[in-house]
Length: 518
Image 1 (cartoon, rainbow, N blue to C red):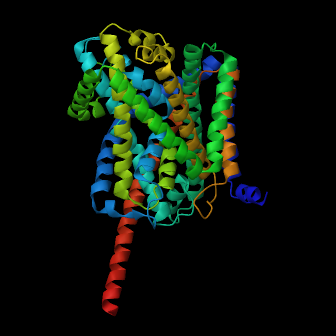
Image 2: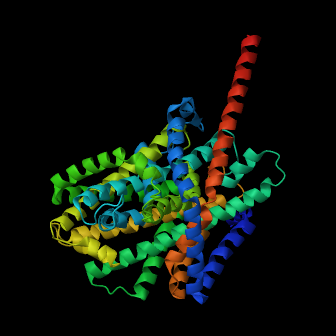
Image 3: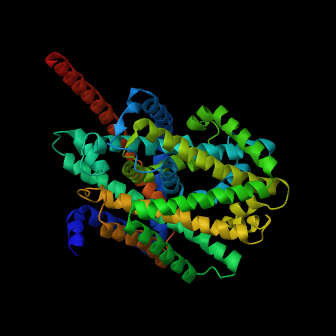
């Protein structure tokens, strides 16, 4: 009981209450006036992407250059905290992959290329050879280096603040307040940043459950014959909530680490089976060629605004996905900071950029190539299922083409549960950190407060389901709200380099004093 009281004292209840209340008020509006609310949010989002879309593309492109500079310059050697790294490199990267990819990647690894094949970029002919050659390359681009940029920049700034400048809590707002110095309104700025961070995480992760639940319920129907009903989906949400709540409550070492390691091992086993049992030669050739196409066209893909054709592809896909990544920037920045103690800036940057990207390419490359081969050979037209909105069920039917009967669909179902649970687990920690005044001596938040956020993360999708409101609306709104986070990242990078300069001058001064005294 004493531990509970101590943990609750450290909670920033005003920020917590305001953020949660805002989300549920919006859900209520979605239930009462679904069409009007959806139309208004979509209109605001469209205005934002049309007006600021090119700047988002430019920010991400230049951000990658900044990430590489941080890794390979003299600053890459800076160590974040004392002692050895707390986690092995495998567990370190595994936790980042599971937190970043979630169930969305498990679904889109089989299906996203089909959208680019049917409605290709660069004004290619739909369903053509050129469209097929570019389809998987674009998934590599959208889930590769560029998406990790916002995670890396946020994590480096927060990690340096916490482990080098000794900012007492892992909060983006606390970092910004420290950088603002004596600015009169820094507390107000910090509160606004906290609300944006919490709302973005709640919106993004709440919708992840909205995407993951149909994928899991569709699997139960296809594999075990259990009818995909509203009641089943409610049970799935509650079951997933129980799993990630238990993992979150026991802590990162005993919970998240074990859950993410197990998920990655299952994912590796699944991909090996698909690789061996599927069209191995085609998969190898397709992955290698798609990496080549992506690298050859990387700058074009990064900055393509389609000013002449106005196809809408950049807004619908690239700008949308980059903006959606901003939903996870605060969450990933806080979570990566928590697990990066003892590592250098170079290790943090390269583990996130290369680790998550390569993991994504293997997942999308093997699954996507297998699905594409089935499409091109006429064995299974997954593009038709995706365009008709039946992609979740189609994946299980596609997997039945492999040897082993129901083995692969069952493993895939377990994989979907694992990725969703680990992502929500990391979100619960990040939310508790953002809304805590300070951390304990081990750098952790109160387990009871993490449990509170687990309940909220489950309550949001349940509320949307019972209200009959569209998940897409909350997702779009959370992305719209998170776009200003670009300004926060830019400010933190400016503050980070100012700290670099100040600390260098201080070290030089100390060295001079020591030299003179000796």
